[in-house]
Every structure is written in structure tokens, then in C-alpha cells.
Length: 327
Image 1 (tube, rainbow, N blue to C red):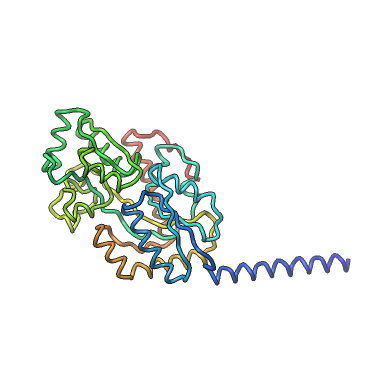
Image 2: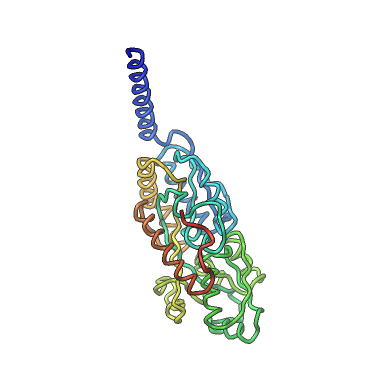
């Protein structure tokens, strides 16, 4: 009996010691470099935004945050890799709500959209739209639609990938206008815009307005719910009666099961990073809207968005049921 009691006491002591060590590790987090995946190709809004925030957050943490490109699959390739990582806070990813609530609706992914991740912090809302080269013959969105109506299959447009809101909005418009145009998907916003600027496609549907703001592309249509204050004369999908808009958010994710105390440290650091001049400069350049949506609020947003997206995609006859189970 005494031997058993000693063993039980030793077991309790070990458990307490491990708990203390774990608590100390959380308190000191981070004690080594953090890897931050970016699920989109270099040069676009996703890549540039997380590089700015990571550079500021690593000053706060005193540890490097290494941004590593893991693009493809409209953002799902990087998220699939993240879902398999240890939930210790040292492997994170920049992604968008599209990789959680849109793409998995249309095609099977290896992760569970509402169960495989810790939704840490949503930091920006996308301002997206349809743009053409400055010398394009299409001066208005109506011009483009009428040409597509008279020339089925001849109008081409690029996006960052199939299943993205920039793709789905264009297909909603095509359905409502009873026209046929050709989608050309790329691995990210930057190559999709380069294709338009180079004349390889007629237009680009993108969540990045900085080339419209600097004059390298000419905007024909905004995907925003309300008029975009930096381009107030450009009509929106809602104003034109299409009853659809882009509500995509950019965010930082971790694997499921992260310690809430680590999540809190990341939330605090990212929010503080948003107060730095570099972040304000990025917002001015790329034309996005800054957000400060912490984990609980963002998780609720995604859960509600999943249910809303099912109704939208079923109404458009794009799906009968989601291709991926949420949990």
C-alpha cells in the first residue's frame, strides 16, 4: 500500500510539474521563430499584408516570423498543410474566409473547415472589383456585358482561383445577364492582374484595388456592398441589382487546439502591429479596410457565413450539398 501511495504521489508530482512547465512555456511564448504560411502567391494583397504585419509583430515578440509561400487551390493548399501542424503557436497561416466557407463548398478539401483551425484574428476586409487595361475598348461595365452578349465565349477574365468570391460573383452576373464569358484562374491576385495588364485576358476580377488606384488598371465594377469611398463613381454589384457582394476577410489561422493564452498573445501583437505606420501605408496603397476581429468574434463570423453560403450556392444551383463536411 505504501509503495502504491508513493507511486501515486510521484505521478501527481510529475503531472503538476508538467503543468507548471507548460504554463511557463505559454508565458514565455514565443521562445523561437514562428513560421507563417501565406496561401497566395507573392505580390498580392494577402502576401503583402501578412509581410507587413509579421514584420511589425516580430518586433513586439522579439522573435522572427518567417513568411513562407504555400499557394494554390484558391488558398486551400496552405490551409491543408496548416491543419496537420502542431498547435503550439509556431506554425500559423495567413488565409481568407474564402478558404473556409466558399471553396470547400464546391470541392472536397482534406481539412474540416469549421473544425481544423484556431481562427486567431481577422485583420482586413477586401475591397474587390472588375478591372481592365486603361486602353481597353470597354469604358463601362455595361459595354463589357453587351459585348459578351453579342460574342458568347469571347470575353475572358482572370481571378486568383476557382471558387473565390471574385469568380463566383462573375458567374452570378453571367447567369443573371444570360451571357457566357470565360474564367481563367491563376494562383494568386498578382499573376491574375499581370495577365490583364499584359492583355492576356480582357479583364481581371480581383480583391486588390491598388492598380486601379494608381492608374495601371481601370475599374468598371466594385464587388462591395456599399459604394467604395476611394472610387465613388464606380458602380457596385448591389447598385446594379445583382444582389451579391464580396464579404471576404483576411485573417491569421493556427491548427485546432491552440492554447487560448497563446491565441491572446497573438491577438494582442497583431492588433498592436496595426497601429504602426507601415500598416497604415499598406492600407493606403492597397485600398483594403482594416479590421480588429478577435478569435471568438471571427469564429462566429465563419460559422454564420458557412450557413449563409450554403443558401447562396444552392440558390445559384452551384451545389446541392457542400462537397466538404464542415466538422
